[in-house]
Length: 335
Image (cartoon, rainbow, N blue to C red; front, side):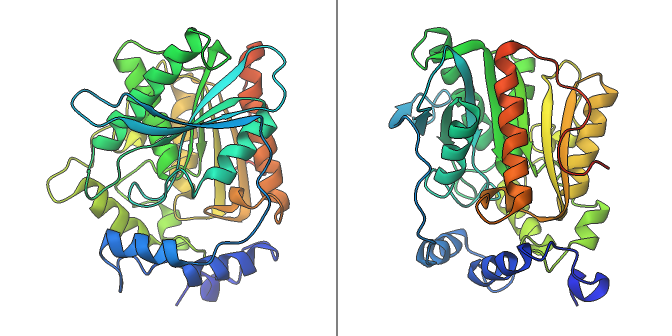
């Protein structure tokens, strides 16, 4: 029995066909599919929708230094079409449960963020689990942040040194906040904003939305259990603050903009993190979209909520240059 059977369909009408199509094409993770390599093959074989790429000023492939003793990191740098003075630099981490996806799967999201915010976007191909378990991805994320901040200070990325942003969706949202935590703990670099799009923040997987949104809305609770098993492994510390930042000391972190979807197992942990940050005195803006699903931001041409969420994120990112304060709730429906 699904959440749809119990509660009626809580999705916006325009979202249901997308959720059904995504669910049909997605591997049955934790069910008939338990091997990460097989899951990646299934995703690679799935037909992709043909759509025009969002235009940007330029795209560059680079290899940048990884953590000490680790391989270089592949990054893809997106530059805006019009650069009116130094803008933000966004270090973007893709989602995929720390196990799937990469630069190509999130090319459209990175392009949209670049075009809408006027930021230089550095999209990072961090190491994936289970071949590289925690903390490999977090160390890669921090290394990429350090490189991007240094390049920004040197003028090589054309950005404002005071406007370096970490951003990501799903597991990438978890890495975006962990990179900010690591920067605080390790003495820099300075981060102006963390953008967390339906982030993965708690290995405990015990919030109410894990039950109310367990099935029927694309990402399932079973998927998430499988992702955490791949990422942490049998001997990893799932309670470590760099694995589960919902339990971290969040004092002195940079401001955050957090996007949550009401029909998402991760909804409650994103909301809880916003509360935790605010209680620690960290400015937070939040866009909550109650009729949306995990991954909805990737469909701005089809969903009004996705267009609104993209605009929210773009505004938050652009505001880092002028040092405008961000506080309260913006966009979506708060709660």
